[in-house]
Length: 340
Image 1 (cartoon, helix red, strand yellow):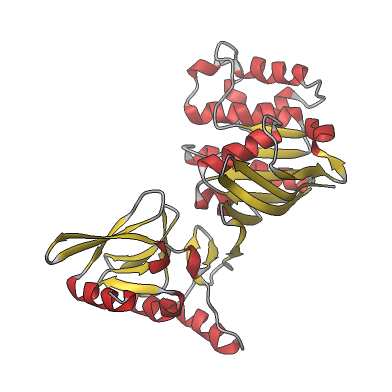
Image 2: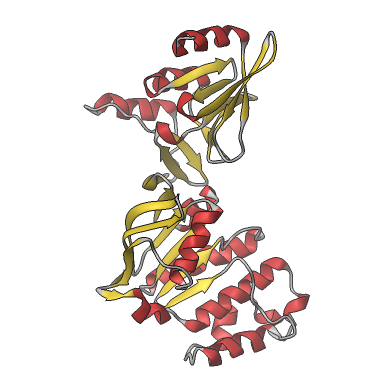
């Protein structure tokens, strides 16, 4: 049995929030959807049945979602806690509300708040309150867990606890769906990571890095020489995992203090190649060396701005409307490319 999105599409008036996509969240698996706030909110409202899909459906197993939504639990970005209650009272109240058979004490110990069982929620730190939220979700004991930005602004201890809980849930054959706008959160917490936007659902390839085996350019080059097909994805390292990005995902690339960074959807990721190496690899995909420290994906450029006779910038069509420099000599090259 799995939580399934089948040809799920959402439009609001004439705007596409997300085109039709298919996705399954199986028991014993954690899946992350990396998306904008708007997409995330629509998915949550869909699962709460506050909105409907424009087309497609959501199912649990072969049954409609509505008939089984009680086996889905949510951890929202907002707390929804009663601050006048103690930690123990809040979890006990949730247990009674959901007629659960889980142990209140064991659940509180799982989120490591045993020493603060009698403390009022209003006296807790932000991270401790999020752990109370997690405890309230655990005491419900649903089959599928939906996490909205679960580790946002958490301290390191609470992040560690959240990841440990995720592993335990998978061992118990629970399914987890992580909805986030932070790539690091998606990669750290999930077995499979997808990006969902108005272009559709795209898998983001993630690989664990073997212990004592550093990521090196020569290792990747060796792998390329063995492959009969061209290796097109660009690798970067996030925590202890290698993430492979499609060239079309990259907005621009920057070199700063000897380190190269890929800029994607408002986030930056360190790359293992120099700017010159990336220029050669990405040239066939429409990338342009616009400045000694920058390479830009020309498909993402919205405007060319002339500040003075010798000063130019490129404005991208990303959410931040990023502005990157365009050198005078490169302006001449760009005009020739554009036929101007």
